[in-house]
Image: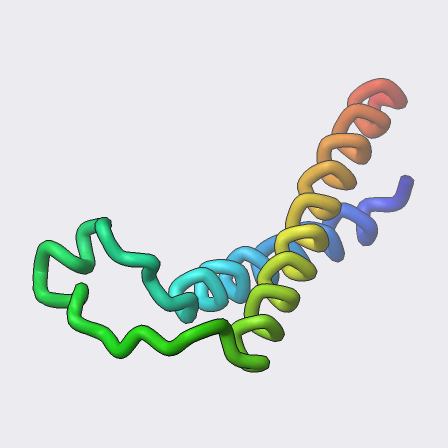
Length: 86
């Protein structure tokens, strides 16, 4: 496989890593963790989850799948590149 494929996967991996970190940090805490120890436990509990939270979950899963695919693709590319001696 050409080298530009690896560079494309690396750039996509960096972008999805940053995006996945931001999406995870946007999620609302469920309580009982470190955030509740420092006063973050006081929140309004609304019944059910909103459409925005469901979409945030979907986007997080989608970006996570792309992130995982980039890692698997880089691993396969590295295996093929070392086998062919490039």
